Image (cartoon, helix red, strand yellow):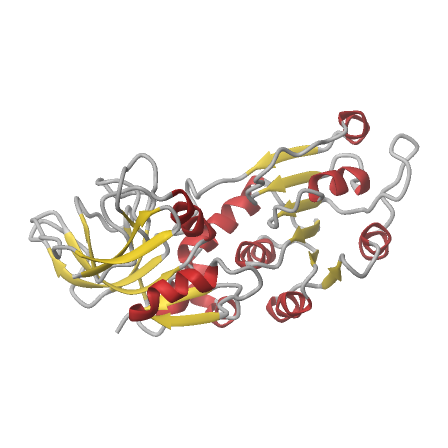
Length: 338
């Protein structure tokens, strides 16, 4: 069968590999869609995925149809549509250094168990939307790490896939008001379509004063200056200026969550932060959220579908990887299979 591998620094190629065999405890999946993640570009750039050396299979945002079920597996039937916990495979992380990748025609789930690696979804959910399950679980984990409460006011930096997924996650948690900040007008328009209460183009507007207008004045005798009444800030953009910006505008007791990857060290003035008692939390992966987010995708798939900017067929998967890693060319790219 055909699969996409990283074969060297900045080199992705088609590779012919054996279709996986199915044992009595296994489930064979026919891939139907696989999203392209920013980490795929990183894996490609460094020429592989630790701890594996040499050629490495790509793809960790999959959705699939069950093609074969081992005799010892219960609760799963041929033809079921499933989303997948790529971190629960027994042969390593799917598409992130394990033996298999989602940009392949077939994937086998060894020691398969419904609710551990697989969750069945309705057949009317479009495959490209189902493939959002993994990145949306990342976004939901970021939301959960900031511990939102009903009535909270939230600011999300970055209207890419994770930021928009967090927007839907915060809405699900019942917060009162959500502002999305970005520098690209089309992304901000999409945030409004998905459900943001307001957006700010930080390249054109004064962020601090706009947030005071939207979330109220959070200044006190101890924490002075232009301070917004925002309860939670989420960095889903990774721009170096964001943490310091939050420190400058946060009220006393606010929370900053960081889910974005910062590629360089970030400098923060602890003297400023001390008076605000700003809580900073980080989020990576999805310890419990992989199937928690699925029901919301099922119920609101039309909104999640807006996150997808481009779909390409499997035979154009190499083009999809190039498109996804080209700055400004696409927001969310998903590969679909026949």
